[in-house]
Image (cartoon, rainbow, N blue to C red):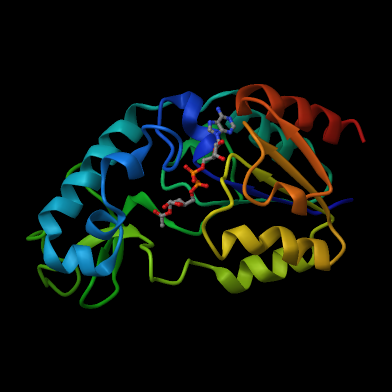
Length: 230
Ligand code: OAD
């Protein structure tokens, strides 16, 4: 019975039609991080930030999981040990594919958060800066997304999972953003077998014991088949 911890990034959703951040023509080539993904940007121009996430929410609502997401859900259903997905993605494609054990460390487009009282609720399809909080009525709602300069969610739970992992797999992430980029080192330190599945070698590829390169829709199902036959 092995514990498997899987870190996913934008690359696993690329073939579902959702753009990545740092690939050519990616989201960060079209938008300034400082404007749409920082608390300071939100304070300067909340409407711009809501427009950005409203558009992404609408796009994500149309997207369907691909064979990579489906294979991970199958792994969770069939593996005799524990499977945890820690995703940096704000879409819900893992859940749509049937995965149950998912941590959204960078938040989710499906959530709204009150800046004033920290209340969380389901985000409507389109949010605006004047939406009142259902609990305290303050007009300071924001998407429940972790921005640069903020602390990712569930870090303690993730640290414990990494310390107990027998296998750590990183899928479709560039390894440019911390603390997620350090999970491979943490898992390795605790003795996990570490695997990178990515279109091409990421910034941290040399830190993994095993690497497989190609589109997620192909290499994730292949890896899952191998893992289930072990
Ligand atoms: P990036 O855009 O930085 O990296 C995407 C990775 O996916 C790259 O290494 C690509 O080579 C790979 N890739 C692209 N298409 C693929 C495919 N079809 N199959 C497999 N791999 C593919 O995205 P992330 O690493 O997820 O944070 O970015 C991490 C964080 O930076 C995001 O969560 C977001 C962003 O700024 C916040 O917004 C807080």
